[in-house]
Image 1: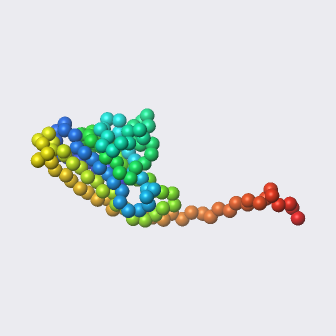
Image 2: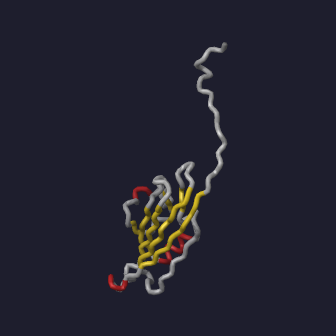
Length: 143
């Protein structure tokens, strides 16, 4: 689970903001997920990947949706926080780009404002124990 985020936009009121989270770098199999997504408007076509609890059943490298600042901040107080899932046995640096677009806050395209943040992260290697399997025990006669 990545750090809790808080969004403020004083003039947005009940107008939706567009939130985009995208992984850059690392393995192509590293993914992001979130929960409590039932009440948001999907920007990317991932609605079919939501389970009954409103969680992504499959992770994505890019997650984009629209919600009010109040809805997003409420999600951050519970299981709706952004989660990173590295590929098994992967380690190394990567970046999660976070973009919040106020879509003009109801004032039109000319009033549109966008905020960008970058979360630089490193997954440290985890030492695994070796495993040994005897594959020929039943195939070879005891001598």
